[in-house]
Amino acid sequence: MISYILVYLIYIKMTEFHVKTYEFLDSRRSNFVLRLQIGEILKADYGLYTWPCAVVLAQFVIHGRDKILNKSIVELGAGTGLAGLVAAKCGAALVTLTDHMDCQDGLLNLQNTIVRQGVSNANVCGLNWGHFTSELLNIRGADIILAADCFYSSKDFEPVLVTVANLIDANKSAEFWCTYQIRSAERSLDYLLEKWNLQCRLVNTDEFTSDVSVVCKQCSPDVPSHEIQLLIITAK
Ligand SMILES: C[S@@+](CC[C@H](N)C(=O)[O-])C[C@H]1O[C@@H](n2cnc3c(N)ncnc32)[C@H](O)[C@@H]1O
Image 1 (cartoon, rainbow, N blue to C red):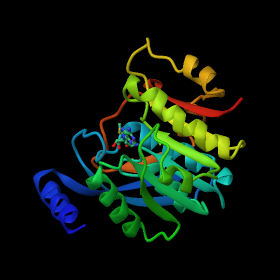
Image 2 (spheres, rainbow, N blue to C red):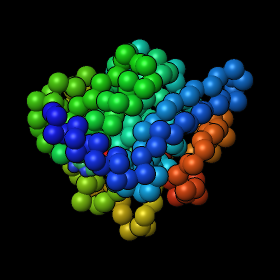
Image 3 (cartoon, helix red, strand yellow):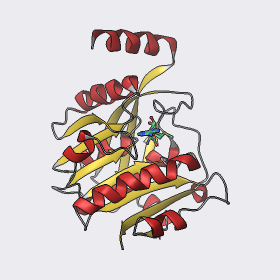
């Protein structure tokens, strides 16, 4: 544990580590403001950077927060944990933020970020996509599974969906809410959804991004919203 902390401290010294404040405002309820402090680095780095997909997913969680209330949530490939922590602040019963077991700096950053929010309904767990581990068995029973930008590379599509299918198998009414940045028109999930007995609905992002605005100094570079898709995947 001590060596992980040392590696983490050296890492944050070497990189541009910042605690960034994200403020979400819901225009449907003028008094609704959600403020989060997220530890991250400013340059695009796989797990310690808050990707535009995470901001869009967080907006959707706020938009649909009635569905989150008292529910059990799991976030896959959480990175800096923005969407999952928004769910925790919106009244989820328990949020489990997960990332790859080898991503120790990311997992430690998530622990620190939970403490910074002052929430008691969130925890962190190492979880590798496509692996049937005791960690996966322990988090079965999730109502909503979240993932932002986890279909980053086409080699990950099936491992992500295998984990999702396994979680949905344990709770047939569970929903997988994920944001996806279109990086190539040639990529498709259709064959894998069929293979794993899942179905998918595309949500129009304009429906909720216009209601829930985000204020964030030093925010991630803007990605035109048409490049980000929000999918809801459920059992067939
Ligand atoms: C593009 S980043 C997205 C991070 C975060 N969700 C966001 O949108 O800001 C992909 C994340 O998936 C995690 N990841 C990559 N491969 C993984 C695997 N095989 N199992 C679990 N997590 C993985 C990475 O560590 C990283 O945090």
